[in-house]
Amino acid sequence: MQNVLGEHRFVQLATSADIFMMQEFVTEPPFLKTLYDEGHTGRMSIHFYPREDIATGVATFGKIRPSRQIYVISQDREIGWRSYKSAVCTFYPFPAQFSSDYDHAIFVNVHGFNFGSKRGLVRQFDKIKQILLPLKRRNRIVVGGDMNTWNLGRLDLFFRFVDDLGFK
Image (cartoon, rainbow, N blue to C red; front, side, top):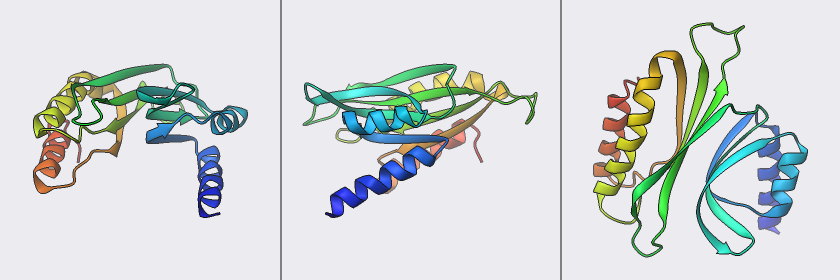
């Protein structure tokens, strides 16, 4: 019963959000149909297929149609699962009535490299920085997700990533 209530609450929250980002998203057909019926469009970077008809990965959905996506796949595979981790950079046109200084709101949905050396996480953050740094001047950027910063060393890597991007 708890799982059914949790799923119902998640669907309720997701369908009321303008934009939402998920890591370890599972493409269950009934849930996807509900999202699409509510007017959401979404993009996903697939990590692997646990079943033939279901994929898992990083997904960003919104009621606003994105103008562009950039998929950033980790260079390293995780130990055990042998899957890659990814990020999705989703570009939404910035409404002119708010500011003429910006072209897009870019939502960066990251699932950080986890099972393996910290080098994999560093390389993943470096790839994302290479994409975002040239875009900073004309766009607003929101970074979110599961960075897998479960110890101080990994947390420090994330803080360096944020500092290198010039975020406050």
